[in-house]
Image (tube, rainbow, N blue to C red):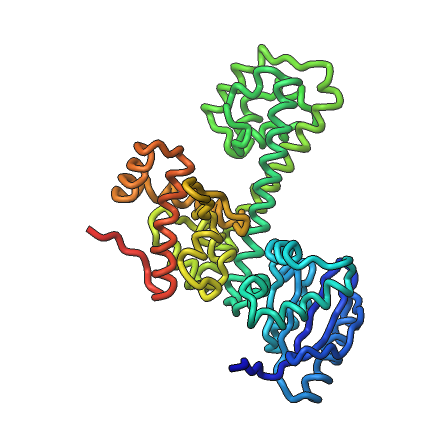
Length: 399
């Protein structure tokens, strides 16, 4: 018995930085037209005008496939979703695997655009093609906002780490002993102290009354600074490196303020996200980890099973056995941001839940490393998370 496929206008978009290649066809296999559009409002208008022409002419729904969903395709992908077209993301890694099995004679933007139409045709008959085209599920707006906010926060945190590393290295080279007042140059009072004068050597001549006016420098820290001042020594590099040190210290202070402001926004938006709220009910899953996971997961409807969720957040390994050899390998389809959030949250979780701590210790006794034991516990928690999100209920510790 032959499979009857309903008529549908199918659109494939090969996404570029400045222009996109578009191929429009029908589910019957007919290619209707191919063209380029610039990544500009007039290009988007032309894109939708052509699609609407074919939609009305053939009186059928529209499905769009594109690489780069939520990347270079923005805001075109959001405009497509606003039109209520079915939207598919072309998974780059699985597309590469598909091309290895079914190689083409050449590669151009036009060929890649037509490849999307071929995948539409094959997805009903070939599982590999179906895995390449992944339908984009509707995501609550709050989770979309959390995704942008938490990714921005992560970038700022990473930047702060890099600047802080440079600051500590320069301090050790220019003013040995200054950093010994605090083993952590990220202390706000220390950063404010570094930026309290126009020139770094003047720090050795500040009076106690001036030190006490610096926010965060109380009597204890003022005494530590005064104990350092008589022995303060600066290398010749301080003439040009001192300004760099103070600039880096000010940059870290600014990053602290930006990160705190973002966390306040994240907390506010999280109150509108049921996914973030449910995750936050799990012991150890704090504000940032819950918000990061809510933003990266988007909606649980994206996942067919808890196993898919486990792979996505990096808590599952894939079977890699052959013959009598039994092994596992790390999956390539991991969301690195979600994995990082899970690793932090799971480690905190096991410290607060005795049952989870016992499970962790059991894995360690079996010879697992710390990270392996955390991922094993995280894999178990993925089952719990999947069930909680599906049933829309909070986590409760069983006695």
